[in-house]
Structures are given as C-alpha cells and as structure tokens.
Image (tube, rainbow, N blue to C red; front, side):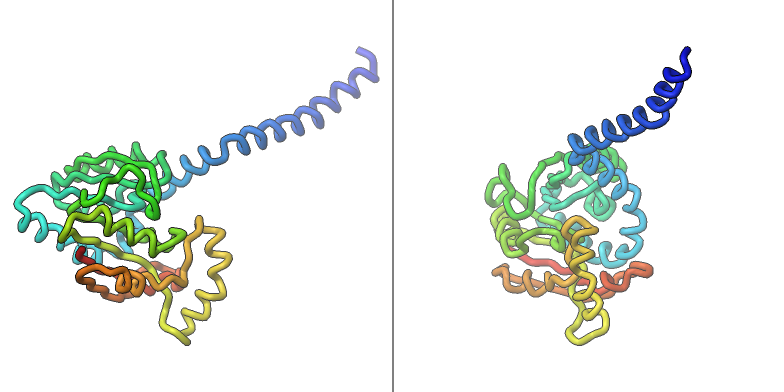
Length: 249
C-alpha cells in the first residue's frame, strides 16, 4: 500500500467515520426524539415512585381514605379516572378491585401501569390524552377523579377542572394533591418567582407559582375542602408548599 493511500485510510478511519457516526446518531435521535423522551420519562418516573410517595405518604393515605368511605356508601367497586397517572404511584392507596382509567399523554407508561395494577389488585385501562380535553370520555362517567402533582404542568387549570366536573357522576368526588405557590412576601415565594422560568423549561412545563387550591375553590363544585401542608421533599424547598383536598360535584 502506497504511503498516500495509508494516510487517506488513516484519515477516513480517525476523522470521517467518527463524524459520520455522530451525524447518524443525531439524525436517529432527532427523528425519534419524542419516542425516546417518552420511554426515558416513563422509566425514570417509575423508578422515582417510592421517593415521591415517601414525601407525601401520610397525606395520600388520609386523602384517599375518603375513597373507602365512598365505596362503602355506594355498595360497589369504584370507577376511577386518574389524570396524569404516570406509572401508577397512587395505586397502593386505592380500594382493591377498583376499575381505574389512566389518562396520560405518554403511552409508554402503559406497561408499568399494568405491572403496578396487578400488585395492588386493580383493573386498569389506558387512555392517551390531556386533562384540558378528555376526548373519548363521556359525561357523568366516574365515581372519582384523582390528580396528584399534575395540575402544575397543564396549560389551563380552569379547563382541566371543567373537564373533571363534566366526567364526574353527580355526587362524584375529585381528589387532588398538588404543590402550590408559597405565601406572599415569604422567602420561598421569592425564590419560586425567581426560579419558575428555568424550572418550567427543565421539568416539562411544571410551574411552581400556581395557586391550584384557589383554582379548585373557584371551579364551581358543590362542596370543596382544601388543606395546605408542607411536603417532605429533601433539598427542594420550592415545592414543599402543597395542598390536598376533595371537591364534590
């Protein structure tokens, strides 16, 4: 092999091939970015479920205990819609044998939902969609609608709550638990305002300045109970102000 051919071959192997490989990887990633993001998000959130539940376990147990009372009064298994169900973090708190419809825009949670529902004795089905427009869900369908750490990401809390009321049966209950804006003039509220633009970009549209409890109070439910509390999230003080509650249609 001539010396010039050897130089060309070395250049191609060391320079051209790596550049081409990087370009191919970038092209594949760009073309499949939504799918990759969906798969990664589902995996990461499923792994984070124990930590998330640990930070609010006591509050969730208290909140969802209302479902057991509701089940006893109705004398049958509950029909539940969970908005932003993720991988099923709330399943352990639901009455066994409940039928749960899981609404989420990420279809890659489906496998995790099936797995976690079997562990908790639930029957689940998956519906791809958004809180603001629950296409395919009929009026007056569910005994209960649940939502935890989701309304912070929706584009319109008002439209989402309108949809909740539409799909609930008369007398049905909306169970919610959300992080919210801190009290005015507090140091936490100062940092929430400061960090919100970056936080929103980094965490898929999540906002830390929403006053979700007040939004539920104004939504027109027949009865609304809202309880503020502080979550036990380590090191992330800007999401510790929280609220939970039950609103009855």
